Image (cartoon, rainbow, N blue to C red; front, side):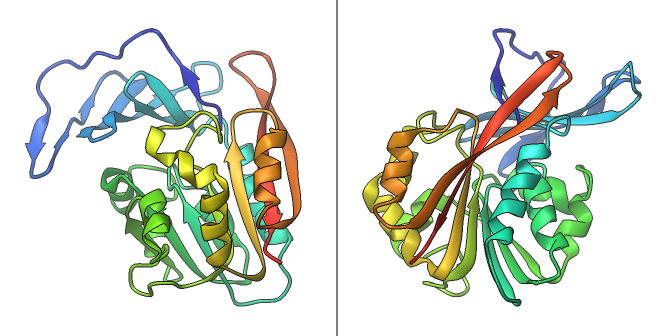
Amino acid sequence: MVREKTDGRYRRKGSPERVPGREVLCRRMSSRFRELAYHRTPLGELTLRRRVDPGTGEEIHEVKLGDEFLMSSLFTVAEVELARLALAGLPGASLDVAVGGLGLGYTAQTVLEDPRVSSLVVVDALGEVIDWHRQGLVPGGEALAADPRCRLVHGDLFAMLRSGRGFDPELPGRTFDAIVVDIDHSPRHLLHPDNADFYAPEGVRRLAELLRPDGIFALWSNDPPETEYADTLATAFTDVRAEVVRFPNRLQGTDSTNTVYLARRP
């Protein structure tokens, strides 16, 4: 996933339809661009839009939060690798997995492609994003939401960890074979300052307690590997490493990189 900040503010025309608890804007913009959903959220204005690449004819789904591009279906290599690398480190079958951050669903979909996975809990702080999947507004969303192994949970992953109750509201304190997180831009560049304790020693310790022995924690980052964060992970985990994922960036005509941190609970 590539996340960029733009100086141009996206402007809406007309008034959004008011729905209890949120505002939604969905209208045809042109044959090549459509805004599928618009919401005012506690984190800012959230927009889902679909456009057609004029060169390839490919449909591209994009998510913006305020002026920031959070994610695009044009860049999914690192999201897929995040799940693949996490599961590759796990032996055995009947795996229980938690994913923090639903987004466009590529990480969760990749988890479910592994036949060893028996259950998946996906936590997202924005109920609107969960609705996009249930309503089929994003590719593969309906299938993901309908998979009997998968449960989509509306919640703040960071607050849930702080509470000591864990990531499954139906089973407080439940442990997992893998916990996979893709929410903040990186351990240093956060969507909200309150998330900082997740990356500190105490947050890392709490996280390790929700993993079974030999379980894997995997984290996506838009920044290059950071020795300081790897050292923090090593206070509660073993086999800590940072994998650099390289992928073609068609917008820039060059390669881009993301980082996947991996760590194992002793």
